[in-house]
Image (tube, rainbow, N blue to C red):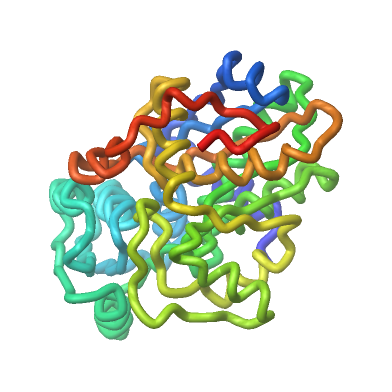
Length: 336
């Protein structure tokens, strides 16, 4: 399986291309919760999401091993699409991205702006299938959104950077939280955390309406959703996790399924407190943090990976249909 050395090698490969994003905190939130919460702001990353790390590392690894492709393809609902398009441009490789028609317009337009050819499909399943078929062409390489060792290693550099930063500041991190779509960022975060601090827990969060990973963990085998789910966390809508990521997800210390109201609530509060533009998928992990902290009798220090900041006007309107900012976050009672 992938190990810390793979993440460290990925960090070396991509260092010249990506941003070393900041780790931020909110004193007010910490006071309300009675615990210390730090955020790795990948919403400030290239393409506005952590996905730049995985895509860039995969192409850099291919070039390093003497197998630079003539063409790359991928399938994505948004952030990975932008990441592949951006990364391909860095290495002068043509890219084609297959996307379902209901993706965020912002993400689709950004993907095209990075120079990729965007092919819209009727469903996520069709996008997945067409990318797989295109990948058999000679000289073409398929960069999957999560189920690839080098993608996972690259994505793991976000937690690696954050933990290194907090360790330098003599902060002992009790738990690391990340959202789960296909499981790439969560798998990478697990690898980095286990490699740097065996005593630190790693915990995932997933939309209740798109809970294929939770179902898979309960059943001990990969469960595939019959159709694309509808959730505010549009970055967590794959039909299933991958076989590679599932092996890592089974090692998690805990996993939470998050309702839509909680996703909206934390998107508003994180944006307000940190003054950062964050996606619902990013903010979702904070409800897992709140639930995990509730029974703790001693002050905890946790790290949350804020995975992205690409959110269009339509989604923003849905998030702000109800104002949750009158309900202060707390661990003692349900604030909403």
